[in-house]
Amino acid sequence: MKRAIQLQDLSREHHDSLVLAKRLGEAVEDGSDEALLAAIEKVKHYYENELEVHFQHEERTIFAPIFKEYKEHIPLAGPLLKEHGAMRLLVPSLMLGNAKEGLAEFAYILKTHTRVEERELFPIIENLFTEEQLDAVLNFVPLD
Ligand SMILES: [Fe+2]
Ligand SMILES: [Fe+2]
Image 1: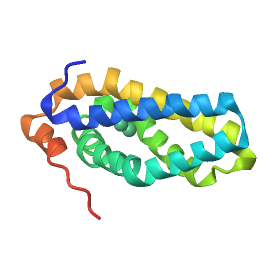
Image 2: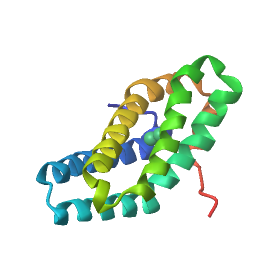
Image 3: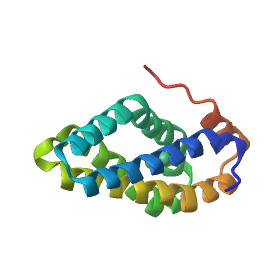
Image 4: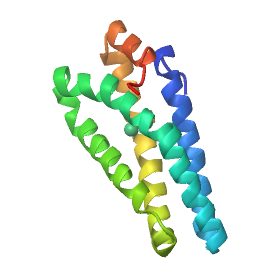
């Protein structure tokens, strides 16, 4: 899908998230301890190195303006924000004892969440946000 240039980094990260969700589904299907443990490691590594920053990027440059200025889109953005919270809680709880359910749940939330952002949220903000607000998405720098 063609994207405003300012959203292209986030869209590329969405592609990575969808690939990871697919891999996690395959690990659950495999079901061996080895595959499940490797998948848990993969999720933790991805979360720590990419996903948490991706969440903060969206929260500061996309969700914050929606909650402040474009309140009519809170019904779409509110549940997405809650899903960031759900994924943040799920990641540290993943362990071999709950791996199948935990990985399946994480993969499901990540996949559906990412698709809603790409298919519903991004087309809206491309039209709604000012150039300055879109540039803030492009120029985001993580705090740490
Ligand atoms: Fe998100
Ligand atoms: Fe996202």
